[in-house]
Each structure stands twice: as structure tokens, then as C-alpha cells.
Image (tube, rainbow, N blue to C red; front, side):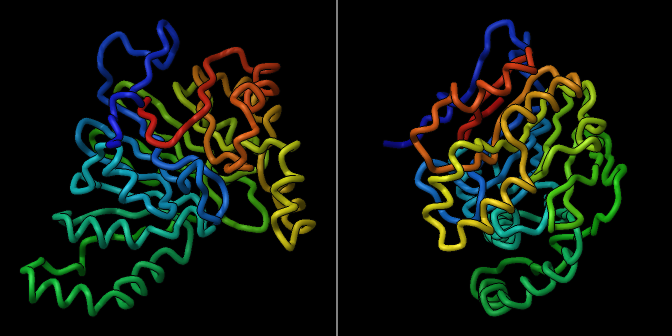
Length: 303
């Protein structure tokens, strides 16, 4: 059955996520699963901020271009891409998004932001796909791929992009052993949206998210780790990594409360493929500390 995108347009009554009039700035959760393995229940991490028709993508997990199509987000309106860090669940389809966009009519220039080695990654991707690109230029009359994307490497906190419709600010967050790892805040005329990226509890994220309308935060359900680790031959090391570099539910609640955000949207679920974990289990620890709106994110939600 075809997906009707309208079923994902959430209205929460009088809550902070419900606008009195249609918002100029919209948030799409394209993929909400955490971790590199393909999952049945959730797609890989990716989000889109739409400001009018302009599209800004945050993270490029596997399948992001198809998720955009399913969500009704026009890939040819892509203006910029933001990578939070270089784990494969966040960058696996960075190059593919640009290549598939180019094949769909996307034209220059798309700005891309993220930690090093983003510039080299962009160049190597174009080199790897040179045969396909050159063939399509000759056979289909496509314009050159060269110059489509302008990569910018981000190594410190501060404003990374600003134009007439949005200011994007980065913070350095803790996601050991990956450094730098970034969170991003989008400030537009009608909305402020913050993306935590992957992070352990970080004071820098609280500062970045202060007073934001929406905080999209990763979430770890610690009791679910045993079943997750049991499926992995390196279970002990995996559990250590997850505990050290992600944020448990209760801490997500503390962070949202400390930042004073209006609404909290959960995403990048770890475990992300365990149907026994209910929405109430994801939110129970959070609601002890955060009294604002909480949304358990799902793929293709529009908020």
C-alpha cells in the first residue's frame, strides 16, 4: 500500500509542536534508527529541515534519498547537507544523496558541512563514480557533476552557515572515540530546531539548545542493551561503547529540562530494532525530569 504522507503530519492540540498557522519551517524525521546495521523497524539516521521549499539535510544514513521521496521532500530543492560525525550510519549515503540528486535535476551549489575529512571524502566519491557521471553526461545530457557540492570542514563551535533564511550554529559534543562530533542548531524566522547528533550527556549541547522550540535528541534504553549485545559477537566492547558515547533516557530528560526547550523529539533509538520496547518505556525516564512535550520519533514524521 502506498504511504500517505498526511498520516505523519502530527498535531498535538495546544502543545508547543502545534502551530496556530502553518509553519514556514518544518522538520522531517527521515530515519530514526541508531547504529550501522540495516533495521526492519527504522531507517538509518537522517533529518530534513524545510524552510519554505528550501531543503537542509542533517545526516545521511543509508537510504536517505528514498526516504526524502517517501516523505514528499523534493531532492532538487536541496541547499545544504550537515554531517554530525563520521560514523557510517550518519554518512553512508552522503555522496549517494548528492549523486542521486544530480541525476534527478539538482543543480549547483549544494553546501556540505561536517568534520574532516569531508573535503577528501567528497572528492573521492566523485572519483569513484566518474564512469557513471561521465556516461550520463554524454548519454543523457546531464550537466557536469563537478562543482555541484562545496564541502566545508567544521572543527570548532560557532556559526557554520548563515543566509537570509537560517542561521546554523554548531557545538562540539562528546561521542568518544569520534572527534570532532557536532550538534547543530537551526534558527529561522519562526522556529529554532536543535539536533544533538550522537552524544553522551554534554554541557555544550545544553548551552546550544537553550530555549529552543524543538530538540531532536538521540536516546539509549539501557535495559534493552543485553538483547542487542547478545546478537553481536563483540558484545562486551559494543556495550562499553554504547554506554560511554550515548545518552540514556533519564539523562535526555535532564538535558531537555536544563536547556529549557519547549519540545523534545526522540530519535536515533538504541536499540532501534526491538519491538518489545514500547513508547512508554522510551519516555518513562524522560518524563521524570522534563515536563514539556515529548514525541517518540518515527520514520517520515513531519513536525
